[in-house]
Length: 373
Image 1: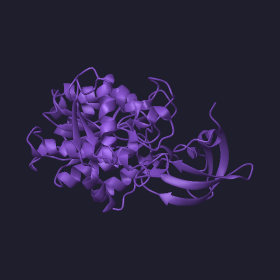
Image 2: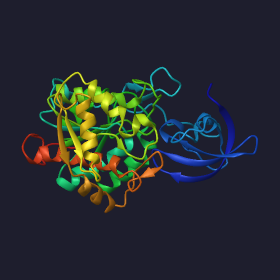
Image 3: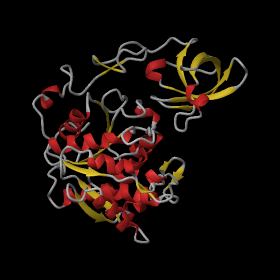
Image 4: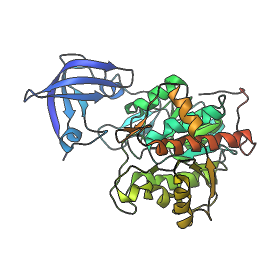
């Protein structure tokens, strides 16, 4: 069961419009760091009595290992119903209304009402949230003018505000617009599902390339099918059925001690085997010590080479571009220098997507006309 504790805010040390972080002294005099989402809480100040969920701390979780504020007992609460009538987190105490871009009251409803194609839009699908930075850098290094959208699924963290990486990528201009699908919320565009999210980023925001991934907090169970990244399979299918160019970002790590993730992760192999459609682009990054061949052999051995398009791509320019913007993503506490192959694979996927714009396979490079959200 969830662990709920009462406490008092003793310090406010991070304050954004969509995320606050505070220090809370609990009833037993211990202190915890806690995050809260102002749209659900209203204002929070030092001295306020709050109720916090400490489940993540008590379970010793990684990215979720801190407290979250459920309610400010001293505050006035949120301001009231917002725009829109589409509800996310439905039938939970935290259900919240959003102005979904597809909804009838949206100014973009008419533009999307009959849309069922994304017209050659390259779509890079990741199995880890941390890869989105290198994908975006790979795109921008190859095609600086490309407009990049990020579509966050509801496979992991639901509030996009929880991702500091997304905040940094928006500020740096590596990502130009965000959208949150399903029960994920807080993107510049709120969308009902992945399919409509791709359509909205293509036709409302006029993106040239879209990156799709869950937020922080991927789940794995050590079983064949019980992992969040299996969603990569369905999203690649969605991009293909909508007339886009699906591009898979591989999960590669030669330092992982777990056999199922050593080299090319079984998450990538399984997701690519589980796609219903053929023809995704699968970039294999250029790696030292014959490791590119090991990755390709694993893909071929799983029958993926016969169904999808394997290409070798140098991701190094993307990582150089990323370093020049002082952004250092990490996965399970390890950064680009410790597991370069994971981020080289992501940068290679971004470059492959951008090259499909440059070569004319994609038809989306925006001319600057029309509205961009």
